Length: 413
Image (cartoon, rainbow, N blue to C red; front, side, top):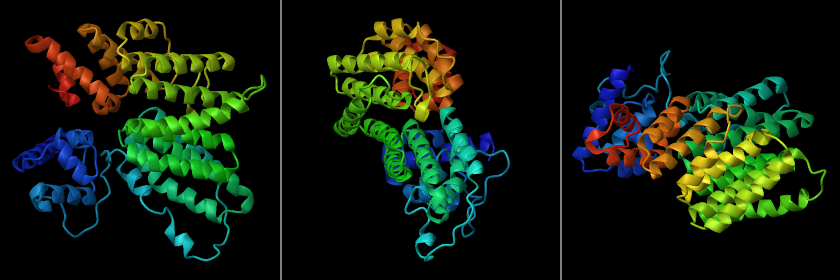
């Protein structure tokens, strides 16, 4: 599907939806999708290539498949994407975590153990995390499709001596998937993936990996706005880790987890409007980062002094302290961190400048974030709200760059 065809298809979806008096949120909910996903479909940004998704969309609109897309086949299986086409972000990943991953293994009796090719699987899981950190979610989804069932089968059929590491690789993969679902505003799927990560980590015999899974679970709860569940999950983990890290010889890995969970609690308190508690949790994270002594990437958390300050900017914005956010953010050098972390900093700086009605600076930061990670700006509710606010402030004098950004992010007032 060419860009022009995607735009034409999206316009047809929008027209049919409006004719039926449905809001984007209503139609998206009936499809089990997010409003941001449907918005991208209607703008021609998000391709819809799979026949099962087309049928789901047609059913939601109450039309035939051919009304929705005249050239779509009716009875044949969904074709594979043509060369150069981009599959739907995380659609395949959602299907992978739907139901039991390898039910055929359960009915096979005692499966014959076979080689699992651990070096190849280690490399594949590292690639999954590279894709997650760079927000390349379509590639992530396509890669997860064959990898996850392979890992799930291997942990049940590989020789016993290989299984602990295979459980570890499986848990790390589910953690990456949970992180990606959170960023794509699909917290229900993030919850499922995080829960499976915790279970796999426990099977691996690596207890700290369990805490990494709890961190992902708490993030999913925050995005679901279940702040009490997020606080409970993070607090119980912090209490256990605090005892574990009392000694000066505490491992860097345990400290990274402890600090990251304090940052989750800071966000929870900020979202709840508890200014003092949010600041106290941020300070606790700073103290842990000082003990750590530098930036690390244990458990793909990117915890360290730099990431604490990036999160401090985000917390200040959540609390409405735009001046503090800008002061802190201007001192941060995040070049050594992932694309996702750099984009998040630029986005939050844009939000801070928008709060202060410094429109030029806000637009520059948001455009920088979009260049680094387009989907972050196009799907993140806070980013879209900031863009919408800038449009309202500017009124008729809104610049072409701002109008174009609002169009790409579907953030018009």
